[in-house]
Amino acid sequence: MMYKPEDFDIIDMHTHPFSTPDTLIGRYWKSTDMDDFVRELNKVGVYKFAGSVIHTPAGTVDFEMIRKLNRDALMLRDRYPQYTPGIHIHGAYVEESCEELHKMHAQGVRLIGELVPYILGTWEIGAPGTLEIFKEAEKLGMTVNLHWGTEEELQNILTSCPKLNIILAHPGDGDNAVMRWDFVSRYPNLYMDISGTGLFRWGMLRYAVDKCGAEKVLFGSDFSTCSAGMFVYGALSENLSYDEFKLVMGDNFRRLLGM
Image (cartoon, rainbow, N blue to C red; front, side, top):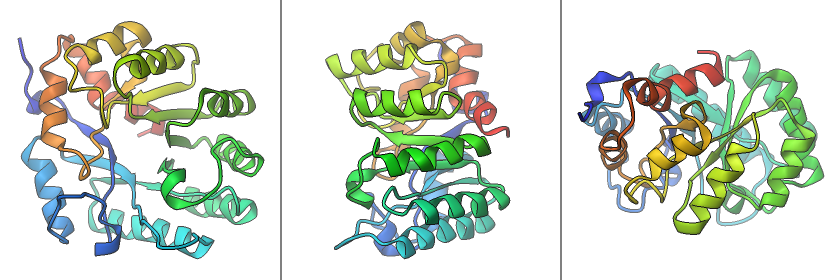
């Protein structure tokens, strides 16, 4: 049988809500009204969502921009209680980032990211400054949603922060997807969301669950860059059991964030 969206309390854990027109990253999205963003998610059965506010800068990113994006995320949470904010850090600003983690943690924030180094700075994922920040996040029990880096960078983080829960974004396609799911299967604190490319290949979700276990796979769409509806119905059309779907479509995210 094929399940319906209303059969699950779906959380789209990988979205990018916006506070101003310059933080709207969907290429084809025309509306600058966040109410429309929420309505589009609701239309396909998604009533809870999470993720970071992203700005594509014209020049160098300073930490004031990072702070502003994080404050915008809190503002959106106040306006939309169904939203779980993800915040940013920056490896070139270690002291400021660690201070920001503590401030956001005190505000109830438990999600960092999605972090996108190629948009919000010139630092590398595995740089020493970034590792220091991740170690602080590990102490606070926060979870990181991280855009894919190299295996070497990711292994460095996983070795340095063995208790930090990391959700990688985007399985990719073909050999890349096979490699990434295999990589996720090898680390107990490593997970992956299904946003971006990959789900359009029939059987990818079933493969991921068989390879890693349903407890390591999370639903995310990358809305409004990608179609939330395509991800909801694409995921639900795969041959998973009710209990597997329940984990993927929301329960795993709730568990990782202590919701």
